[in-house]
Each structure stands twice: as structure tokens, then as C-alpha cells.
Image (tube, rainbow, N blue to C red):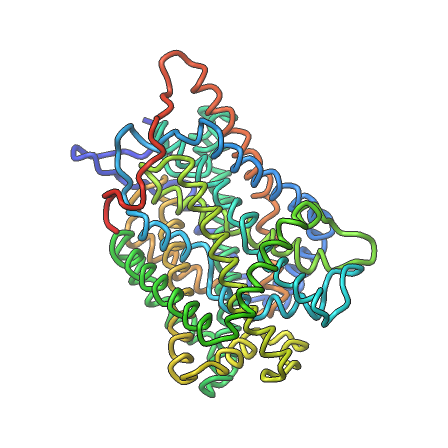
Length: 527
């Protein structure tokens, strides 16, 4: 058996393998950390310069890639191929619907989800795309809502599905490892087991490391500012490092316990608290306005979808570069981690149910999330309850604290918000550590605990270094990491189509299952 495949013992359990991908990726991580320690200014300047070049050159490519992946995933789900089960016929999913949805949502968004939820509609309202609406008007507010859904809705989550479905198809229907390279089998053949496949997996690890470190660094910065505004915690580099160390410690413990325990239970707790916060804000906030905001958001999103989806940079217009290109690069950088994680937890589900659960459900949740939190923020700023200067200063964390402070029981709400932020941080970090361990262990379904521990430390160190370099370094890391993976993502989609077409054409298989998968009420593993 080739070294890149998962070996099993007599009981059928996979035996993890630490090979060249582990060694090369660990060497890269250590080299990056050492370079950042010795030459922090050079790291910051280099990443910032690379970001400018990448955005100018590849921004429109990001836009096109996102549109292509979204159309492909929806087309596959709606076709008869959507009935194909990601696994052997009759196999029940490992996780029930509540656990599965909670885990993929928790992995797919970091703690910035809450900060952006309140701030992004306002930021777009005061700085709409040039030539569209006058800043501060009702039209600009409506635009802010629909662009928030655009950046966090189906387009973004389709990138995760574009990795999850092909990887799960290759892993659970063709008995390949849960690796990005496995999804390229139709294009690369047995080369996926040799050095070309190892290079693909190495690039995936780098994208995961940069994407996660970027989000952890940005989230820690915002969390420190939010805690300072709410509880008087000092804003300092030391405080940020302490936050990363504390939360990554809990995240590491969660990752060490595995999917069925720490990661699943923390994800469920995160889902319950987030839902409670949404419901509380909806009923004790400007309820009537929020209902209208939801309708305005969804209606505007559908109406302006083609224009938003295909908008690219024009001379003298930096809006697309600062928003659309960066957000798509950010999501693409996260796609290797979240996509393979979703593939890992989706065995036994149909392609249609995976696409629905990864694209449509999170898209709907994002619509409610931004209409409730963003709509409340718009209401509070318009009424003068919240200081508009927080919007002008782009202080998302302080703005979030101020908005929630206008609700009843502000002290209790502040504590709940702090817990939600911590859980959003932890549940994305523990899933990332798990998948870094899996990818560098030959696609093992249960990577060794020491490897998970090692990658938890590496991600934390990388986040601390990027944090020292400032926001430009953090953003630059994500944008740069997305470049090679954009090409890989499109190749994965092409390979997936070829795999399905070839399988359907060959005599005797595969079957098109008549069932559309387990219903929410069907027994399917732990809930």
C-alpha cells in the first residue's frame, strides 16, 4: 500500500503516518516563527507588500472562482448526483443533524462573526461602494445589510462545500485518505500518492496555518478591545498574548479529546448560546425594524446578486480591493481547513444534504444573524443611543459592546457575549488543530494527540507573531495564502466532476440512491 493511504490494523482502525508532509509543513511553520521573531518588521513589510500585489493581480480571479464554485455546488445538489451517499449504501451518518450543523458552523466562523455581525452593515452604510448610494442614507443602510449577507452567506460557504464534497466523495466512496490531494485523483491519478500530491497537501497545510492564524490574531485584537470597553481590561500586546494562550489552552484540550467529545459538546454549547443571544436581541431590541431589515436584506440580496457576484476592481476604486477581494481571499484561505473538516464529519450523508447543510443553512443563519445584530446597531446609531464615532473609527469591538449594552440586563448580556466570543474562538481553533493533525498524518481520521498538540502550539505562535506585525500583516497573510489554493480549489472542482462522470459511466456503478439521506428526526450517531 502506498504511503499516502490510510493503513488499518486488524480491528479496522486507521494507523496515522507521519511522513514528508508532516516534516515539510512543520519545518515551514518553525522557519516562519523564527523569521518572525528575528525580523518582525521585515515580515510585516513583506506581507503587506505581497498583499498589495496579490489583490491587484488576483482579485478578479477570486471573484470568478467564488461564482464558479457556488454555481457548481448548487447544480450538483439539484441534479440526480445529489442523491449519492458519501459512504457505503445504508451507512448512517456519524453525527446527527444538531451536532453536525453545530460543528460545521463553529468551525466555519471565528469570533469575528459576532463583531462583524453588528459592525459590518454600519460600515457599509457609511462607506458604500462608489457610485451606488449616498453615505448615511436609508439606501446605504439597505446596501450595508445585503453586502453583509453577500460576504457571509451562500457564496462564502460554497467555498467550504467546494472542498468538502469532493474530499468526502474521494474518501468515503473511493477509499482514499481525507486529504485535499485525494480530491484531485481524477486529474492526477496515482501521482496523488507521490510528491505532486504531497506538495498539494503541503500547500493546504500552509493555507490552513495562515488562515487560522490570521483569524485568531484579528479576533484576539478585537476581543481585547471589546473586553477593555466592557470590563476595563488593558489594551496591550501582553493582554492579547494572554488571551491567545488562555483560549488556545482550552482549545487544545478540546482537540485532544476528539470529535465526539470536546469539539462536539463545545460546538453544541456555542450553538445554544448564539441562538439565545439572537432570540434575546430580537425580542428585546427593535423587533419591528428587525423584521423589516430581514426582508430588505434578503430581497436586496436576490435582486442585486448578479451585480455583486461579478463586480471587480475599477481604476481609482479601492472599495472592491478592501472588501470583496479581501473577504474572498480570507474565505478561500479557510477552505482547506473547514472543507476537509466538514468532509471528515459528513460520512454517510448525501451530497445534496451536505450542500444544503453547508451552503443554505449557514446562509440562512447569516441572514438572521446580520439582520438582528446589524439591524439593532443601525437602529441604535440612527437614534443616537450609540456613538456614531465608533463607526467612523471602525472600532468593531467597542461598537459591539455598546450595542449590546443598550439591551435589558446589560451586565448579564456582557457576560454571555464574552462567553460566546470565547467559544467562537475555541471551536474554530480546536477544529483547525484537529485537521492540521489529520492532514499531516496521512489523512488519519483520528490524528495522534501529540501531533494535534504540536499544531495547536504552532498556530498560537503564528498568531502571536502576526499580531505583533499589526493588522496589515494579519490581512496580508490570509490574502497571500489564498493565491495557490484558489488554483487548487478550481482543480478540485474539475476533478470532482470527472470522478462522478467516470463513475456513472463505468459498468456496474455507482448507484444513485433513492433516498435523499437521513431526515432531521432519523437516528444517526450522536446528536
